[in-house]
Image (cartoon, rainbow, N blue to C red; front, side, top):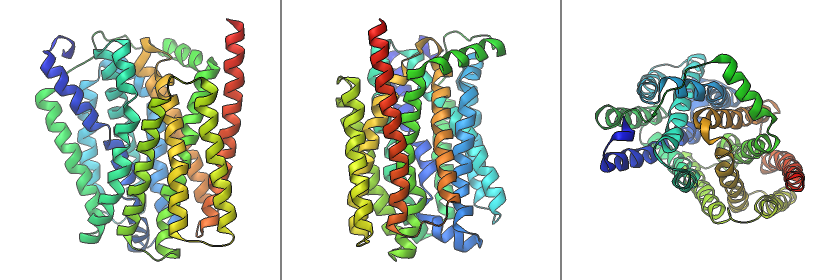
Length: 401
């Protein structure tokens, strides 16, 4: 049991937990620069390639809805080992097939595996530390996680140029394999007391969470904030290569720059946690909406990579600020059911993101800067509306106390 382990071992496990956090970002983003070459190599449409990402995000989200309660019942350690092994095998199998259907199925399995890893890793901090230390560590989650979106596409662009798109999944197999070896030799079970799994109890718990209006609105904000970032991730590579005529390395550099914007947003969001709720939420979303409107207007006069990226950079910073603010507060709503609450929250966030990705994919080809700008704007307007509702709910709650 890790709870009874030495302080040095617990510190090592904590460090490795942070090392594993970016893995979900790598699994999501490393092959983004390869979207155009995958479409050509597999002889499929842009929409088919985008659907491999949507299928991953959907399975990742749906699994998190219930995996938390299972991990609270059976522990974190063995499921984590199985998930890492599944990730290694599925990544290698993707490199061995040219079937887009099989790739999508394997991406679904990867979504399941990564959801187990993410929920168990988040829960480890709650298992091992007191509430203040947990809040401190959780505030760093978005910042550390952003290393994935920063480094993954940048690395993926070079891997494709030096080898081919298959190299992206070879890297994922190596990353997951290294984590698996660490878990086998150094880690252990962190859950101090396993809870007996009860379907009726869990349904009641989910019902209680769904009735918590502020918790649900916070999840909607998380999902929509991340969806704005994903608009560029699934459409940007095609615009950069097919419209602006740059290669996968340039796509990697662009996503590297925008990955830093998410990290900067996370750092700013962490520093803003002490601000009142309305200031924490309204200021970033107003700035974001104004920037998107300016980008849309500009797009009708001129389109350029050197216009798109600076605008997207600040737009994504605003999303990072919102995400960090609401991730930290939402995770602390149900501390006695950390695994279940974390999984439920993460699941709904990615279901929201996968739905928006699907809508982007089926609403036609995004070939120009203005097409991307319109999709940014639609999501930003919905996000603004949700934040207004949240502020009203918070004011009502304060007056009722």
